[in-house]
Amino acid sequence: MGRSLVRFAVIRVVFVVILTLVAMVGSAHAGPAAALPSVGAARDVRVAGGVFKPTRVDGGIRWDARWILPPETHSEMADGEPRIILFAVPLPEGETLELGPGTIPVVKQGRLVAIRFDRDAIDGRTIHAVLHQRVAHDGAPAVPIGAPIAAGTAVQIVDADLGGSVLLEIETAAVLERRLGHVAPPGVGNAALDEARRLTSFDARVGSAPLYVRGDDVKTRSGLTGMIVTPRARGRNGAIAVAAGFVALVAALLVAMKRLRHRASIEHADAVLAAEVDSLDALHRRVR
Amino acid sequence: MGTLVTLLDIACGRPIPAEDSGRSRRLQLVVYALLASLIFAGAWGLAAGSRSSALAVANLYKVPMVVLMSCAFAAPAGLFAWRLSGTKLRGTDRALCFVGGVFGGTLVMAVLAPLVALYYHSSAWAGPWLGIASVGIALLTGTTMFIRGVVRRLEPGTRKRSVLFPVAITLSMQLLTLLQLASLASPIMPERTGFSDGIDHIAESAKPHSAQ
Image (cartoon, rainbow over all chains, first blue to last red; front, side, top):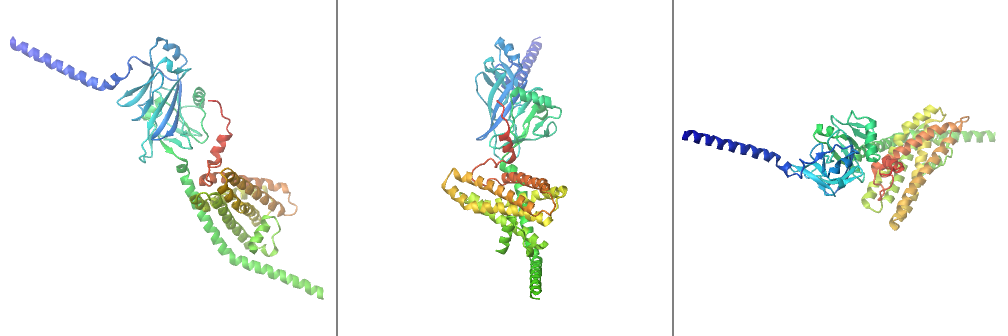
């Protein structure tokens, strides 16, 4: 009897230990999420559009982000509860949100995964935020695009103009295609792009190729990459080709000059001789 | 010296002397005109970049490169346009008229080069403007010389209007290539100008900006 009681007690203790361990493991995974400021309570909002304007700054890229919310969001938030905009993929490591009125970053495993906002942060239908992406100058050709593209199916715009004629060339593989003056997913028509431009009042600079993309496309590709291209780098290949053509042309002109010299002198001598013969002929006729 | 005088005569639209009317001699004059243009363009480049020795040295090949390559790029379209228009003009005459214009234009740049250099060293405002203006004057002079040369060398009975199309095509091609070549070779002047970024910058400037 006593033995069975002891056995029962041991089993209970083992069971409790196992339960505690499982709970600890579970909380370890959910740890950062638990640290999020009331993410569980906040409902996520699907944006209607967005535009992300990069600017090259010391040590990285400053992203000026504007998300356009559905018209009803403002009235729905009368309950006072904050909302979150979930990003399609976690932003690159080290990217930070500049704290603004009514916006709070949502971080998971050290990376920004969403932005939480209050009703006060809404300007018309727009949520505005500034993010700073660190870009290592380690000579790597491609950098991850740190634009906070919201999850969902809304077409959002990533401007490719970094200022000072420096461009962001987005790598187009599988889910993106390069079109005349912009990059977009193959299935997205011009009407959707027009609507995205209208919503965000976006006006692209001539020569840059902005990216029109949906959150779901970004999720499919597990993030986007691109290259920072300076005007000097862009023109380098062309300049080398033109310089090579120039050298070849000058060489050809010099060879032509050498080859023509002999023939031209013969032609010149013939012409002078013919002219002198003609003048002598005329003189002879006058004398006679 | 005699060749230089002949080239000046050609640029000014005067008739070619009988002793220089052979095919080889004409081709030789074309080659001489182009090589002389390179020297003139180099002189202007040296003046425009004289505020920085590195830029001045680089301009010694950059500006001649822009001039020569623009001629090379414009020539095929020009030749095709001449063929289409059916204008009666000897091939070597066409080439002489074209390089005569280039020669005249770059000569204007060369004679204005000392002025450009002087103003670049003595005035922060006037130097760049004079540099751009000298190129504008050179383009205008070259165009005038080209058109005048073509009109004067037309075979009797050929309508003058018939040269408009090929001349316009040749000049448009040269201007368009000059614009992008100048952007590729940029910086040519110490300042960033409206031409430094080529057609993109010009198109952006011309675009009506909507309110954000």
